View 1 (tube, rainbow, N blue to C red):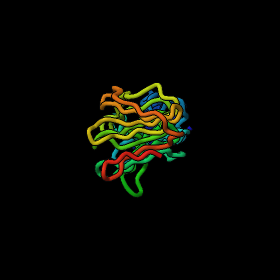
View 2 (cartoon, rainbow, N blue to C red):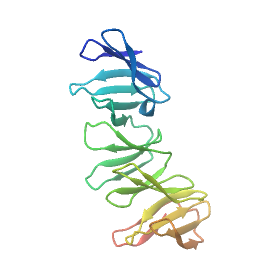
View 3 (cartoon, one colour):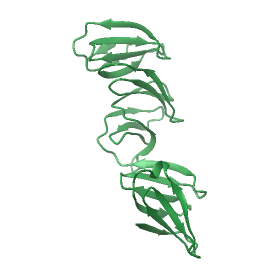
View 4 (cartoon, one colour):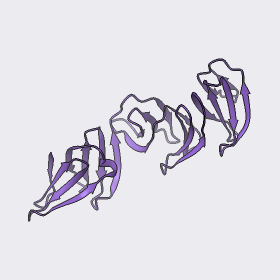
Length: 212
């Protein structure tokens, strides 16, 4: 177990899936549980100068709680990241290998968890959204809210998606050797077949579509 003083004569104790508090009278309460702490033992707990509780899970997930014990932010270690874009203010947005979407806001900052999901590719869409993909689907991720919106499904071997200047989306399916065009809401509008094992798609500065 891990322990930390609360500054008022009590202690916080990190246990499996939770952090407990023992006050000066010996009363034990569970103060935070589940959510960011689920399915992992808490190897470290601490309280910072602002009165925020920190809990470090065995999986590398670090959770910070406000003084009222509401979840503030989550952080994680980088683990085999598979994709990277920059947002509108220059932060790095990465797909982490532990099924987390993380943000790096500068040098000497912790990777902040802003979403979750098993994705292998990421592409910029708008100032507030990115396109995230796995082998069979393309989804829209909102950087501000963390909401995920399904757009395209049923692909055999997706190798990414990009946004056109008109807001529509282009996808590459290596399993079917085809390129598909969708509206901004994910409705199929056109399809091009006959590609040979395509591995990527992007637009150059002039708006020309390039396929690897």
